[in-house]
Length: 178
Image 1 (cartoon, rainbow, N blue to C red):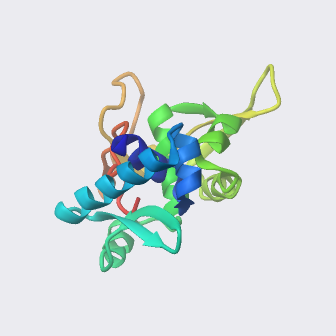
Image 2 (image 1 turned 45 degrees about the vertical axis):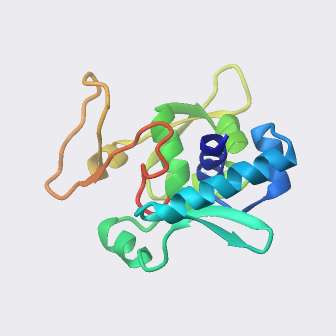
């Protein structure tokens, strides 16, 4: 249950209430609260860059205090943390319908998509038999980030100053700052 809550907090990329977490996880409120307490304790006892942050009645997965500057120094792109999480979701899926992405990431994904399109990290093509768009990674993404586990058939140039970014399904540390 804790892993499921961790995934939800990571994918949503915004503070969520206990009721929202319970609904998204498909759990009773008490079970959600217990799993969240377990997850928070687990993060508190691990020496990781991430923590479960509680503000009011809302919970989020974020970088520990003091590491924000490190992310800005390591990432040569000017993207918000939420947009980076959306980009990571697209990268994990390789190709995803915009409607599916919005379902996973919430309505804020529309703004993330605009930001990612404006900086040329993704491409968008209209779905041939529907009203949504297909989103995929652009050539600029592949030049900027060296993603491990990519299929060998996909052509990719390796620039001198590329960022090493390892994206793994279910890994909340896939992106710095997530």
